[in-house]
Image (cartoon, rainbow, N blue to C red):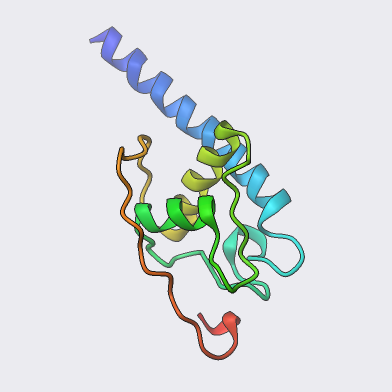
Length: 120
């Protein structure tokens, strides 16, 4: 019983630390300039908060970017930072948190926007 409680506490602490790192990386790389704004609330880039994104979509877009848009790929980012920002975007989007990256991530179709990105 004590061992299970210790495992759960350790897991919760690790998730909190990863989300804190993700928030920091997001603030430095994604919330500035043209991009997504504080906590994904929207800037000139699309709003991320409360969108309920699918994990495979978030993973693909953050790693590879979106061709033909201002969204660059970040796959050259340090793996721990990359995974943390993916978890953070999943958290703020309301899509849930998944710790393991699937072995095969299908290529999702990027959303097509028309009109101001702020409206999305």
